[in-house]
Image (tube, rainbow, N blue to C red):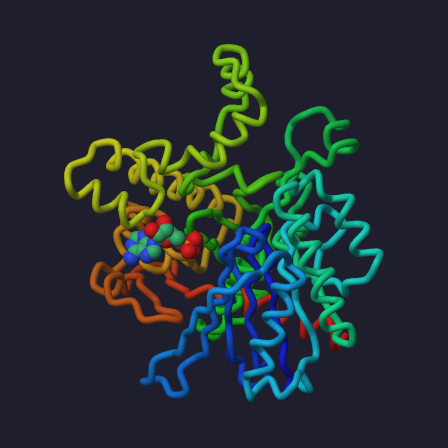
Length: 403
Ligand code: AMP
């Protein structure tokens, strides 16, 4: 048996998931949260033993002052799981890492050089990289004998051509400061594109797909033959679609104007655009379920927020259709993409001339993990796919340690 442990380290949490790679399934997942905040907690979930039985969860309140002790707690929790068998089958640990800049275009073994390079990239991901680096450090000392791999959210998009990744600003901004489109959600887009090809029984290399990852963060990617050729998020995850609390596309002059007129500092504007904008800025709620229910109760601000959300998706769908030329499939994934028939239907309404039509019955009877929802005469397949970023990280980690 080959097992891979996937870790996602945040500023006050560590998420983990242990996979049996031969069975392509999870053996355990969990989360240590509120690290260093006094009332920390370990949540542990063991999957159902049969498809009909429920999964088992437990939550333990425990003091976890720092990430090192959080990692120890995870190691102890794993050692209680008989399938872990003391770690004898653990062949690799995969770390979710946010920003690989232009340096990392695939999964990479973690060594001192990688750590130093990630430290140099901190200015590109000031909130995420320090937490990612702590996670790597504590996991390396907790499991010194196990190879560890960094899987970057940006890596999948390193295939973008320059005309898609450059911004039309002076060359020196790119050369000196690295101002370019990097793209994010790469593991999700890569995973979903592969699942679509597998489901349709077609080689990934022949398939042109647009993937919409619609969660609290949202992004679209144009994928030609399995390769990302354009994506909506940019230097940071702020660009592109309307999101839960992020604005998405914006005239950059708005910032200049607001800086002059309102006296807000750069940090304040950063906070507003990342945390107080998007659906939340438009109607006060960032959870799409709440926004849709407000809309159905006649809230005009919520109705506009939903309309802007689906309109932006439709714009990217049209643009990426043109980028790809021939379009074979559109895939919806993540919280909203997987669970909201209304958002899918409204995003794809009146697109028959582009060969895209959703069947209203199929759209409301979606069965995970993958389902087609187009009408019988829709030229383009439309699919709903359950994303699994952790499993994609595990697969990339295994491939990296085996090579
Ligand atoms: P994620 O970031 O992938 O966990 O997705 C979170 C988003 O999915 C939130 O905006 C949720 O409101 C949304 N979501 C989850 N379930 C539904 C649903 N049944 N209908 C609409 N939105 C949903």
